[in-house]
Length: 125
Image 1: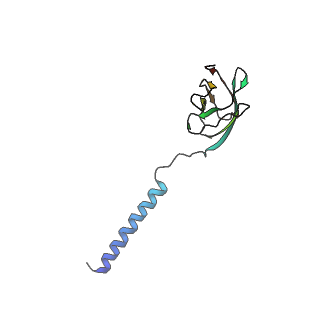
Image 2: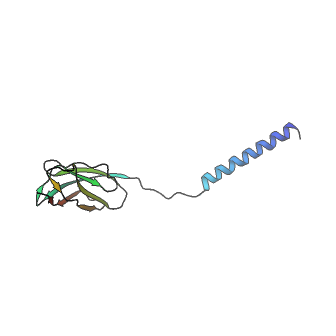
Image 3: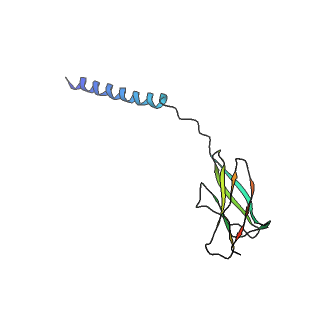
C-alpha cells in the first residue's frame, strides 16, 4: 500500500468517526426541558404570644446554613430558589444559652407565597 492510499484510508476513517460524533450529538438522547430557577423572597414575622421576637434565626430547610435573624420587630427576609416544590422555613435559637430561648417551629411555604408568620413558644422563663 502506498502513502497515497494510506492517507486516503486514514482521512476517510477520521471523517466517518467525526460524522458519527456529530450525528450522536444532534440526534442522541434528548434532555428534558428544564425551567429556569427563580429566586423568591419571603418576608415574615416571628411571634410569641402575639409579640414579635428578636434574634431568632429563620432557615430554609433545604439551605440550613443561610439563616437570617429577626430584627427588633420580629421581621425577617429570606431568599430561596423556587424549584416548584413547597419549602419548610424553621426557627432556631441563634445563640445557645441566650436568655431568650424559643421553640423550633416550621411553616411550609408553597410556591407563590411571599409573607408568613411563625408562632413560637418562649422556653425557660
